[in-house]
Amino acid sequence: MKQLIFIFFLFILLQEKSYSNNLPDELFGIKLYENVENYIDKSKGKESKYRKGIINFPPKNVSAIKSLVKNDNLDHYYIRTDSDYKILNITGFSKLETMNIDDFKNNCKISADNFKDLLSNFYNINSRKFKTKHYKNYTDYLVLNRTYELIFNKNYNKYHLQINCAYSNRDQKIYSNLFITLMDNRYFEEHTLKLWQEIDPFDDKMITTNLKGF
Image (cartoon, rainbow, N blue to C red; front, side):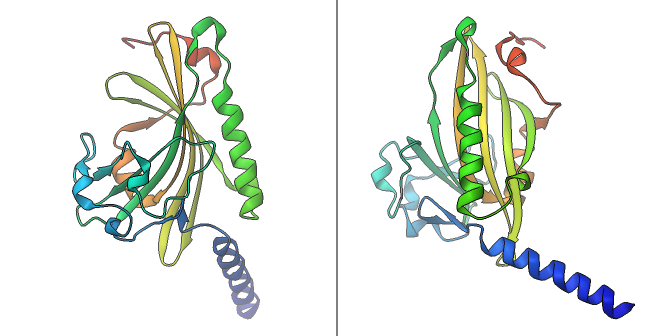
């Protein structure tokens, strides 16, 4: 009986290893956990306003990032590191069309769904591995985040692959941004979840409702 249990757990372990081998340790040509100076001059970084000890590298001219592999569907890129300049976050994003509330169509969700399916096929994994989460956060205004998240272990590290639609309702307009991120899962838990609060699933009605003051 003990031998059967051992064989079962060995089978699960081998399956998990094979599954994680398909998944990325880099994004847009940038490898997580490397020193940022392999890609950009560290003097271009600034400490995050909201994440203590985290250095932001959001160059306006993306040609400043060496080896960057741009995606045609994403216009902007940034890197975040710890105080030792070890890369903990790699993100590409696009600011989608701003819409009047009455004309709102959730094009971000359509794009996110397409990315989830494409990445699932590309990395040869079941799309159900991506978990859907919903969050809210306040900086200068309320932002609603709807994410697909995939957490996996590889090379003795815990990775977090995320597709995020971020919505804000301001001045009778809806602003939508699409983010694709590969990050260290501990970074996400310690630096992002301090800013984000997980909430129940929301629909388009909540996105288009003025929630200022609530």
